[in-house]
Image (cartoon, rainbow, N blue to C red; front, side):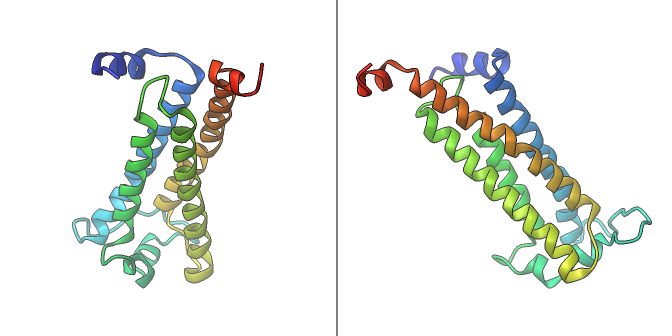
Length: 174
């Protein structure tokens, strides 16, 4: 695809699919912001995590745990930021006629499914392991969960488009 075509489609197309992909990119990058804040604390750039004075909230307990530093010799918030950046990139890949359409929709949906499952696991871990929640992590998880129905819509739309394509019709004998 020519850069001018891609630019025009990503910026101007008003189809439901493109609006969903824009929302997914927005939610993914939005979910990365609170994790970026946590990452700065995990690296020692930020000295205290701002936490509302509410029962059950203790972001430093959750994000300072051994679990938060246990993967790949890097604080887990950095992994979360990178993962969500990859999700946003999948949403931004290709114009209105992604190629291969179904493969791209499925890849994005699978990535979002992975993100949501990970966010759910970590949210459960906060309570079961630490008896506390991180407000910033919950904000990130909420934005992540909001991407799921949008990704499913894109997969359904891709399947509909493929069923209506001349190639699909010729294969089915229509």
